[in-house]
Length: 300
Image 1: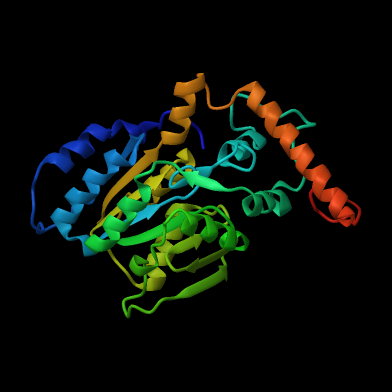
Image 2: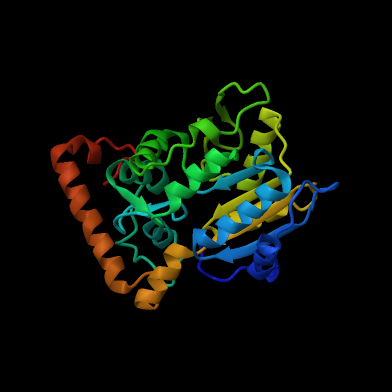
């Protein structure tokens, strides 16, 4: 989830999206604007008027809002276990982990363990209110995360703890049944009550899969995500569709860190995360010694 600016797609700037939002046009047009517009947004206060404009133009029932979770709706209350920590472990930031700082079993065990343990906080205080307002307006909502299905309980716990429950406006089939899907595609996925877990699969592909499975179509889609890769994948997936697609690269969390300390992660913060993880593992392995002695891929 790089903080670098977007590539060619970013040239379709936020200014154009805001001009559309402020234009005051209403009523359903005879044709749908099928252009994909990609823009950066460092606050949901920029996204809200675009949703309002699309609702006015197409009707809220014809506008789907899709949002990522990590560093978009919620962010970790501590660096350890959060998205910044994950980026650091993957070598995606300017500060790289030393071999001694790299954790074992990152995907098999460590991420899930930290999801279970680590509390999260809202990226911005207005997020639950905005989601509730969109539900009440008649929008359909989807939370589209790269987390794996096995992390659903911890994910739902933190969403609900912060007042985020989109189940009443969740994407459902045309018969309005509330589906539960769990399948092995490229990797395992699950969907229930508006929350789709994708195990890191292409979000553009996953959104198409879910819409095809539920047999739903929308005149407009708003997609919000902090990951450069997810933004590009969604952009590429929807270039040839008759949909008014607004894609927002949400930069709030990293922008605030850069504003405060000049960079996303400092060496001191990296050392603290490594130290905190070592202390956590020492405690866990003292209480449960078989975790580090059974030869399987458990944190050590």
